[in-house]
Length: 138
Image (cartoon, rainbow, N blue to C red; front, side, top):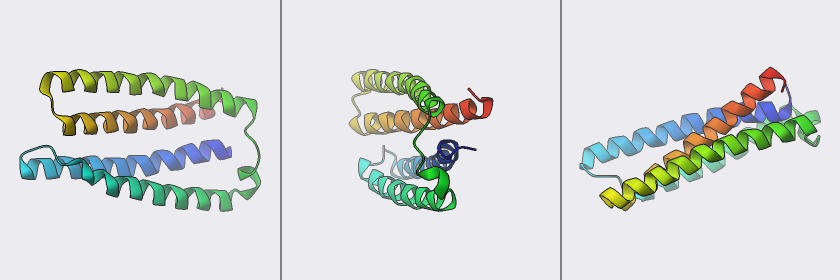
């Protein structure tokens, strides 16, 4: 398993756990206050993502020190480009849908969370597509 594939697995798990927890927190707070939660909740999410991502990547680099410093080969670069392009379409669709929803309802907090959810979903998709491509040997 290449370092890029290991990194995709690690980042998928980190984002799925922390992003999923964040979404659950936002839904719970929104239900408790009977309104959309204020966007300031994102600070905890961002700080958690940064810290856990750095720790996870450092641990991965230490355990795979030989592969960590090796430059990406042509296959890894093409997989990264392909998965990023596909995920970009999903993100664009999510943003456009969010903006349309905002035009109709006019709720800026909901717009914020919809765009953030689009970003999380598209990034998770990018990691999944990378993992699939690496597993298939594309």
